[in-house]
Amino acid sequence: MIDLRMLRENPDAVRASQVARGEDPALVDQVIAADELRRSLLQEFESLRSEQKAVSRSVGKASPEDRPAVLARAKALADRVKAAEQEANEAEARARDLTLALSNVIEPGVPSGGEDDYVVLRQEGPAPRDFAAEGFTPKDHLELAEGLQAIDVKRGAKVSGSRFYYLTGIGARLELALLTMAVDLGTAAGFTMLTTPTLVKPEIMQGTGFLGAHSDEIYYLPADDLYLVGTSEVALAGYHQGEIIDLSEGPERYLGWSTCYRREAGAAGRDTRGIIRVHQFNKVEMFSYCRPEDAAEEHRRLLGWEEEMLARVELPYRVIDTAAGDLGSSAARKFDCEAWLPTQERWMEVTSTSNCTTFQARRLQIRERREGGTETVATLNGTLATTRWLVALLENHQRPDGSVHVPEALRPYLGGRAELVP
Image (cartoon, rainbow, N blue to C red; front, side, top):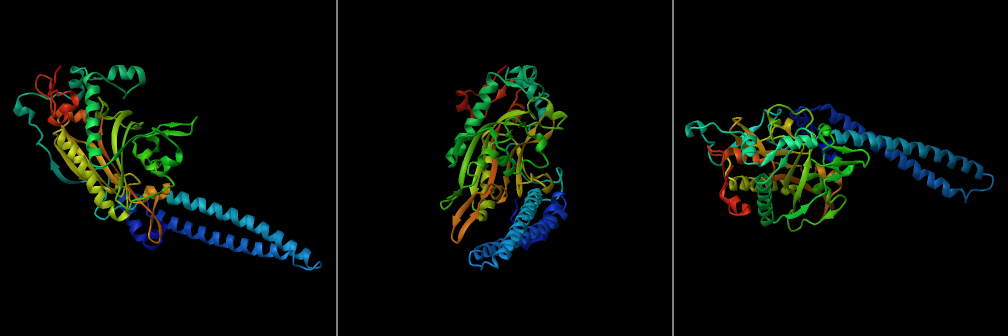
């Protein structure tokens, strides 16, 4: 939820953000009008209630001949107060609904446009391999994994349906090794590790901004009125809901390890083969609470830790500045790291880090006590490792015989193994 005071003082900035996202700028004026009505009706209700209290107090002081008139006036005022309260409540609910529909205001410099309008900031890591020059055609991750007996999608589909899978043998070990290395990196950087709930209440899901345009991608359990999370960001954001936290010594950082669930409604095409786009996966997620003025710098730190992980597994990758229209509603800016996918000759997202400024914390009522009162904090998130990384690891480190090179930094987590052999 955006800051209404900022909206009233600088509506043009919010309109420009809506336009850059490809969303309706007229919503800004609707929110302003609804908020003005809400404040007007609330003021009217409070004025009437004050008058009613004064008249009620005067009943006992009235003379016998005046008392019936005073009682009648008190009753009439009580009816008006009740009606005014209902109008004020309805206006408040409408203003809140409209405000919740507004996406976060993007940071200056965020590219305008949609999914294809990102800006490539840089390319890092080793150069993508020239398999033709090496004399062989690369296998895709699923073919490699099946040769290694690492992934079983057929039995996954038999048991749970399409886009489910088993990680078997070395595949399960490889995922565990990768996620454990991410935990070691994160805890060394000062993050507190949490294993998080994967079912959350509607107010937590809404508070993080996930019940908007992409709510159809979220699994919902109506019998329990709970949502399955698509990322531990949701549970980590809810961890301090309704609390006043202490950031006097710097950001409060958490590292969430969880299973994630996504319906991937409407997704189709090449990403449905293997484990690129699936309904269930595991992830290690960074989450930070910090002061709003420190959020941009904290965002760069999260990106740095993501890049450190990518360097450890020796992957070619690039960093992109995501366009406004491809941001989630809660993100003011998002940087993605995309690893090279040899068999599809394209870049594939493997990490994402978002600065959500005060948008989520305002919804979830998470504040810090500072001089002059309490202030809403900022929240940020970033992926440190996820199951999808296995795709890039297998394809980029494959050999002609179907074996796979294990990056040196990952070997201690696999018992010193330097290669995976069919």
